[in-house]
Image 1 (tube, rainbow, N blue to C red):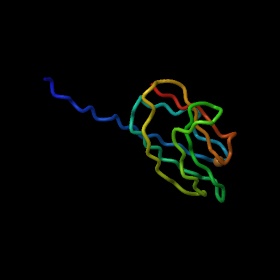
Image 2: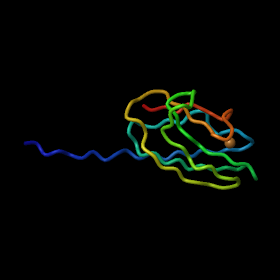
Image 3: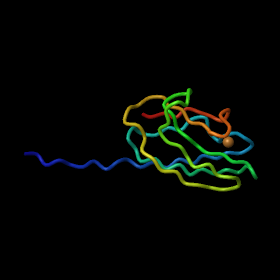
Length: 105
Ligand SMILES: [Cu+2]
């Protein structure tokens, strides 16, 4: 028998900033199945923001819901990326006009 070799999940860290009701990036790209860390900085004084990831722009099926933080503050989110490559969706749940593509490669 061939011994099973455990493959360590790839780890990626992404920095995202919210400022002036806008994210610093329109895309977040991660490898499939990766352990994702998002360092999220909310620079909007007295304004709550978060980062959540959904299967698509309808935001009906969540893959990850980030804790909402009142700015100015920085929070670290950790979750596992989908195993299936494709174009997913991220947004601020408080301000759905703040959104972008979550790309799994
Ligand atoms: Cu927001």
